[in-house]
Length: 73
Image (cartoon, rainbow, N blue to C red; front, side, top):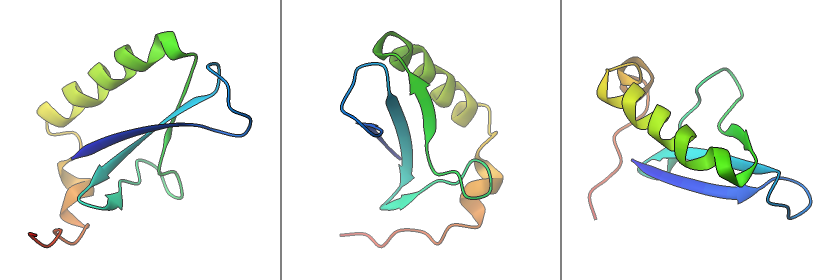
């Protein structure tokens, strides 16, 4: 899995978005939602920690089952 961050809209430290990818496929945590709106930069690390804990707890397993496994390079 890969975590990507980017600014949504105008480049701003108050508008951070986190995208989690499995291979090259963005994970859809809710229908049509492939990113997590973080907001301020200070919330980025706690948000990443929450995503990691959810992955470790198996909360993302069902989502990953429907994504085709990425090809090995």
